[in-house]
Length: 494
Image (cartoon, rainbow, N blue to C red; front, side, top):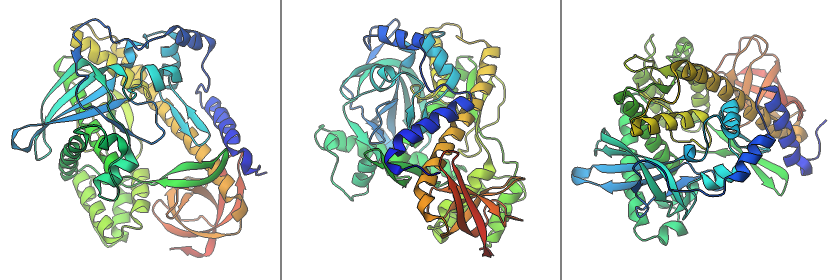
């Protein structure tokens, strides 16, 4: 049965809660967590150790329009020869979330915030994540600052890590900043009214593009995957709108990748272990080679990130409309990232998709537990103290975070599918162009072209594989279970 869309927000939230519980995730905070949270009354900036005063710098955040759990700020300081000193401030969540507290226990159980069309299930109570530990506009906050010198060619040189007090002078949104940088719209009010902010952001944009160009020259993959953002009219779901990449999102992504690399290198220099984020060489490289061959292109028989990136760039130029579909197929074939323990001096697998060897997660401690654990390692290294986690604890944490991240991703996908089923319910019998996004022993999965909606092919699925194009007919939806079922039409594979 497909319930009325007028109650869709509450319905989707209820589905999300059930899905979280099924996956071993906690949708609600315990009384102990709530009691600890109530006892925290201030985001104090008084703390032990050396705290630098960086409050006057032109810090700004760029995030989604509705984001309140702000983890990062950035500022640029131009240097001679076109180089720029980039400073990234990361919210000092550890200052208020004590290790082994009830709050910490909930965060370590879930390991991540869960973002669904029915609502957000934050890793930390909102009093913290959207207020006291958020780098909110015009609020003095403690932060870990990662400073790095980026040359005009995008290479990262000297770097340092500090503890500091900071103030966010402009809370900005991706879409409006991107439209301004592209020259399509006037500067957002927060840019126009803060003296020097316009020039500041243009410097950040310039050096971020240099970082991006260098990364992709080294083999970082230019993938463009369409994700759906739920659109509501009141509490009624009206659309799943593609959440497309833009220049401002790239700016933040490039800074965060660089900052995470600096963090990994800093812990290595201090002889500390770390939680590395890795993406192994793809097991299904031969299928990626076959996808390239189907377009008349060639890839080497062994996995090669630079060759794959060159192929992706050629396909983007040749067929930009279908490039997101190709990207999705490649993403599925690359497999998932994972967390691993990296002991000092030990070699470790790098990140195939980012074409980097040393990489951790450190820039989103309000939303991800590995980042909070890494922050504690950084603060101990800065203070000259021993690592706060034993090696066996970090190894177990890496495995647990990988598992829970996968569970959270499955919950998010499940609820998106319920939202999609709600939207598609009146369209049973219609036909669509689709691309195969997953192949299993039971049935392949497809995504509708130029859409964020996925479903299962329950009839006529023989011989379909990831990346194939196919014509399908919608035959059934089930909102509660998130089922969207298609049948392959007589047109067959396309």
